[in-house]
Image (cartoon, rainbow, N blue to C red; front, side, top):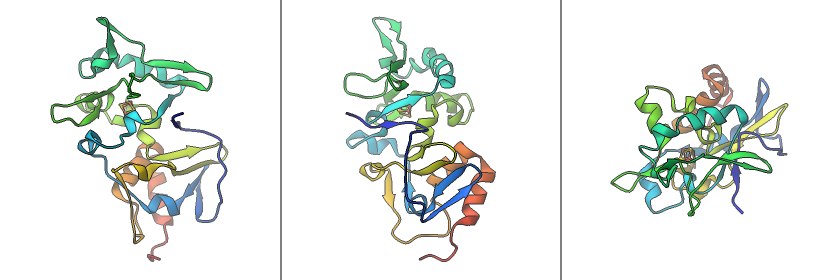
Length: 206
Ligand code: SF4
């Protein structure tokens, strides 16, 4: 059974090495030990996030995601079946998720001529001059980070993140988050949250 990436799931974790910012507990040890660089070319022959998870969407995202289908289908042919646009949302016992093809690949994923796997919602956002996080599901923007629980929510790293070639461990901890991780934190939580997190990182590498 495939793991789900979802913005919020129940989770318990040790609190050593965590800091709290507002309503969020942040696993700073794991966040700052991660380097993340999205490179669709690497997805050609290796594990890819767009065909590895059940991508959950919340009710508020359903209309937004469904609204992209007519344009996204011009890039992602899996959004068309028998000449008709498909419903990209599947309802499960646990809520709603994005549909996949028979290979388990998200119906919004598509391949470019060079074989790279790309997200049609992400591509549309760039065409529309919108931040991708304003178009894609939160689960996708967040990956390879993960949010568990509520009050407080816990921000950490997806357990299988290092199975993917776009994620590598940082051997020597630095006093700043890796740029790819910082961009995700800013997209989800905003710039003031990121600044507070960066300032809270121990400044002397251990
Ligand atoms: S919506 Fe886009 S980023 Fe998310 S799994 Fe599908 S193709 Fe990948």
